[in-house]
Length: 120
Image 1 (tube, rainbow, N blue to C red):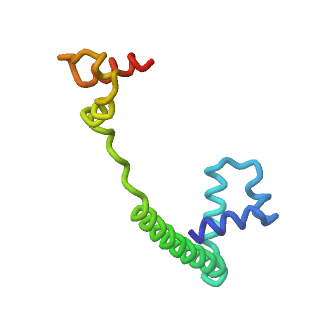
Image 2 (tube, helix red, strand yellow):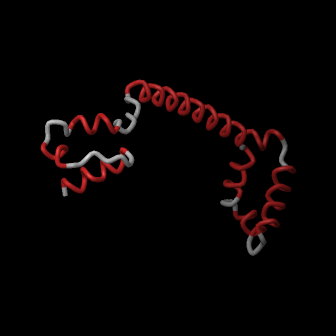
């Protein structure tokens, strides 16, 4: 905001620095707020113009970011789900390894674990 820009700038001014020196955060906010409220529109104009420029730049960058993100999403394939257990087993069908593993009435996972044990 234009007020935030004023606060950042005000900390560099010796007169305000002296007022803020040794004060608590809440007192500093009160002092800066009092200075901002005492300024007329002409004095606030540079801060408001700078804020408007910053806002425009932000909006332009955000528009570019969103366009780039949309393009990336179009070009990037979605993550593939973990292959089905049957598909994994089909890769071992021609292998002697699968024949050495007894069919387990347990779960598909236990069969995969057994295959992994046989490999290692």
